[in-house]
Length: 124
Image 1 (cartoon, one colour):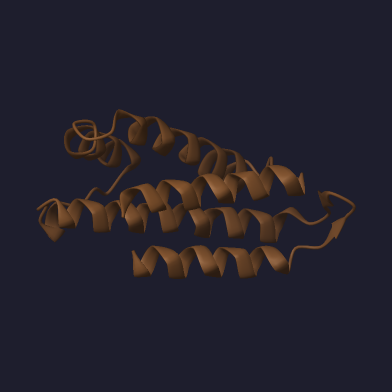
Image 2 (cartoon, rainbow, N blue to C red):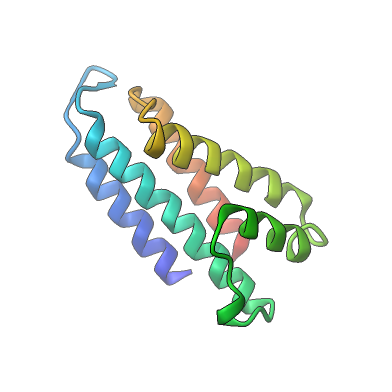
């Protein structure tokens, strides 16, 4: 999961550049960028997991639905919680954090990053 770890580290570095007052980010752009990069870390981890399970590189998913499908196929057998955790990090990092820019609270973003790190660790 070397590549996933690199992406997550980059996401944390981006987040450090986000100005904040008390426990609120005052500029959403770097927060969105950091959330997007953290989500990419999750996708990199899933890619590595799938490759280790025998999925051909050409068959790796190109959409979130593709990731869902292959996670159900390869991870549900071993750990049904992984599919739910993927949905959780997808919703909070990609949709709320990156796409919608709804994450202003420093503690919420920290928890989202912890969820991503936990998910990545479970794939190792």
